[in-house]
Image (tube, rainbow, N blue to C red; front, side):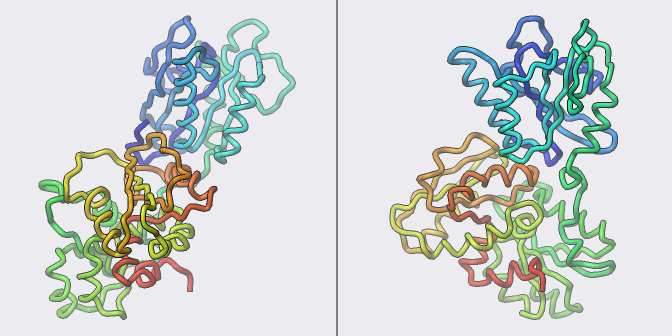
Length: 390
């Protein structure tokens, strides 16, 4: 499943024919999901962007029944479980208050991935379907709309604020009227006629903080700094670390777009401790490169081309690189000596943390594109310094 939206993701889980798709339709007020009396109508997870009052834009994910059968059914179940790694909140849909092995398994998974959840007892329009002594279950009817509004209010109350409140990228570093210089090279990877998403996000964040954004190419840095007061911060495309660090005086804080994103939504402490492992890599080690978007690649692509070449050159070792894009299931993590994640500008913090979790749980060092590049250019401490409390 591909994660392409930096919004809170809410997964709908449960058995076949419990009304998961009907619940999505009731929440959205639209016929989004296919509804049928035959069990197993939903096969692969289905995504829909909507707005929930009190949270804002979210992505609803309708999953296949957790009790699916047969070889194909097992594959559907696996895809549903994979969706757990991408969500910020879960709705467990039951009927007639049935809570047996499938539901207990899901609850264990929610706890494993630290996903907050609600248990939703659907089909309350049917006779005796709502009778219970449990206080942690929300009775609703997707058919009549009964209880939907109250359930959504509880969802808003329990949704972690960090999932939907847009924390500032630079707000703990810059203040009103500060100047931030953004170094944005225009090369073969730059999209025609526009800036890449991290650059746009940074400009918006600077403006939101009532600060001043100065955007220039790498060959203008030295000239700008020689003619203007020192900026509060310089943020550069990570590929330009080597050149830009020579043009920016040590007295001026310097970091990279990818490092900012690593601090904002990645596992920053794990990145800091894991990055120096670059110098401990051995011949024939395997490295997993995690790309969180899907795009056409070229020989100039940073994650698949430049960065592997630079790492091989830096280490002097013969290394093997594997690549995983989007939010697809990861290969066997045990064989990797290191995992390196991109900035993750198009996905949520929860998705990045869960994507790194298998490696972190096994003690495999993890890092971030920009932090690795800074390390290989000998400016790692300088690049992370703006985000480390004095």
